[in-house]
Length: 92
Image (cartoon, rainbow, N blue to C red; front, side, top):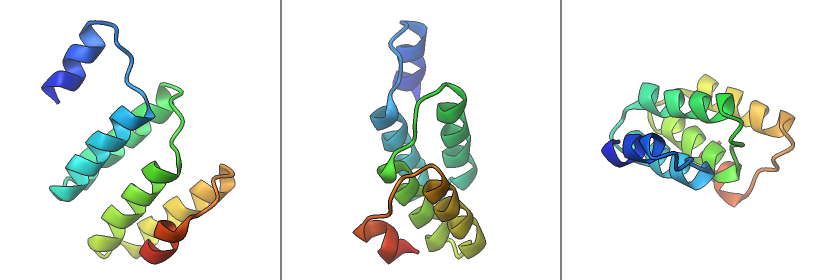
């Protein structure tokens, strides 16, 4: 996170890949709330989540047994016209 904050301080805008990387790291550590904060921040900053973003979050929630949250993300993804891929299908 230090590098992420340094990027922002130096006016280097994070992109979807930056956010996906951090979401993945937090998710692997079981820090669901931090992953979701990043997800909401990226949307607030008009950085569009992509299929990888949704796959990561669906997997994070599914791994923790939070099936309803996984399904909510799956439906949001479809509403945003992001088609599922093989990984989305496996996770959901």
